[in-house]
Length: 210
Image 1 (cartoon, helix red, strand yellow):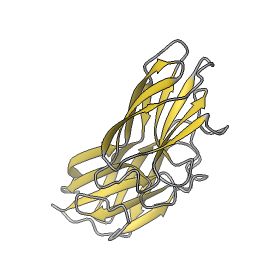
Image 2 (image 1 turned 120 degrees about the vertical axis):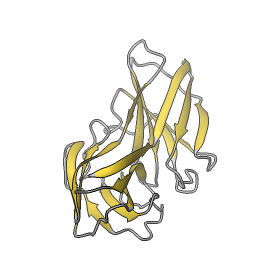
Image 3 (image 1 turned 120 degrees about the horizontal axis):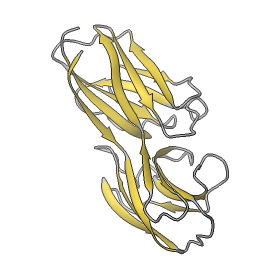
Image 4 (image 1 turned 30 degrees about the horizontal axis):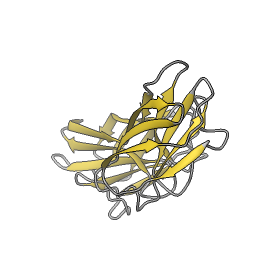
């Protein structure tokens, strides 16, 4: 199994400031330039962003890995809202969610989680816990693995990439037909659209004995 594992996730937090404004703070993965890849923040009526179009969409204004944004000119009238952070040109490429329940001004965050279930000299079995309500197969999601401690946003040097066929947000995926050497470091990433840059989480593993 791995000697160590480091999980990195796109994160989104925030609070309702008034009936016309929501404060948000986001953090992306190392090496990702959120404005350059077409990143955005959007607001939906209700607790799920997967159906109707958003009330408003806000393109990101900088390439900082950690940044804050006030979403203004809103008309907040319903009981609940969701805010999504997108990491690509596909407008459903959401990497993190913020859900505001009725009467609450602070949002409840939802992120993508990756963990190692099992491994051997020629495979890694990864558990993915995606955002609630998403259908990974419909979004052309993927899992890929690289040697080293980073996942390049252009996909360069990937050992393998697997298209996700699951229709549930919590599933297992196997990366096989690769040699995973003792004492070496590998990084697994999960993408929420077909674009390489649409990474929602990564897991860096230092391999131990099997």
